[in-house]
Length: 310
Image 1 (cartoon, rainbow, N blue to C red):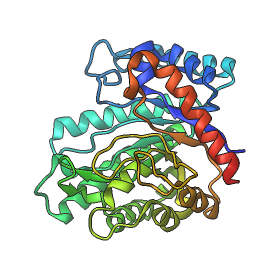
Image 2: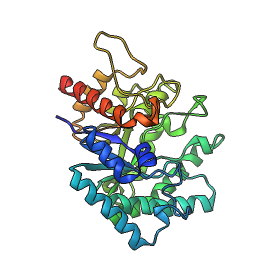
Image 3: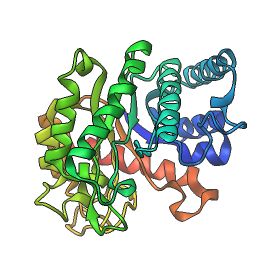
Image 4: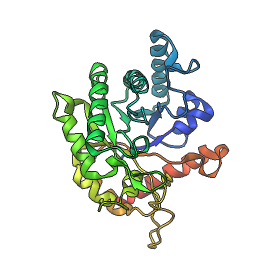
């Protein structure tokens, strides 16, 4: 039976890092995607209240203690989620991203997670950029990040993309052909392939199907194949990044989302995926105060689905 995971950043923000781990364990999850994302300022060395602003010895002690706590709980930290903004072509901002990305890689290693997920360069920050500019900027970003992955013995996962500007257009790397080209170009440099991998975000990939003949999620999985080593499982109606629970009513009704989950599970089996089935959901959807109950329900639903799909 595959292991079930949860992305827990909303729990971390509300309850703190240790209690978030406890909630994930109590709700039946086998593993977590530990949030190190930069959107809320909790993991940014420029924020004096951030753990990323601590002296390195204290930083190491903090994440070593979290790892020990997870071990006591019997909970796997299977992946982390690091930088989410991508290079902006603003030197001071991009330099800060690299400094934070180093800490993402170090924290990931200290937590015992093999992979840190990071976003590519986004059209959201470069709405009128030429294709060559996007390709070069993205390649430069990962060229500066991956030495830190190598230093700390982890992999960085580039995450599949979707749309942008409220669904008005496809994100540049939401085009699967461009995503694969960028991935292979980065892997072709030195030993980068040893430290670079892919996170399949089913919600992002589903949103991209509105544009450019992009494939549905199962076909995208088959095209990426064994390069996929971590997952962000979630659903949507293709119109927004809704992070819905993967669910198909067996009577044939599709509830909320539009992804074919039977076919998605089949595609993951076909490529030999043997990692954690990690869900990245909008945990506060029904209210922050009942996030733990929603987590328990989500884990139960996915476990039941995977047991029947085997």
